[in-house]
Picture 1 (cartoon, one colour):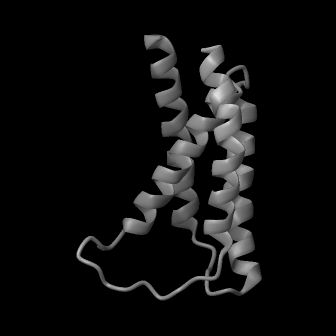
Picture 2: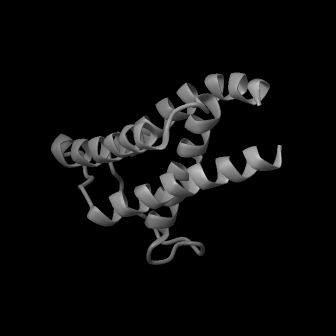
Length: 118
């Protein structure tokens, strides 16, 4: 587990920086693609926050659940608030925060399952 932690201590800041950029960059009008459907945005939020949560727990496995939840949710709320305040074509959405929260919990659960298997 220590080797995995070292790897994710490198992966986490890179992923977090890319994620922050992607969440705060100016919004563009979504084009209709064959794979686009209503709600895909929420699935993306859930997925990216699940990987963020998993990466965080992998990098810092001794972080207790309450601290983990605080850090992840503060980040989720902060990015949503900044999207709204920056006026760059994005807005704060409560369902995004819900999807982020579920993603964070999924990331935690997956980490715990993999840790148990190893």
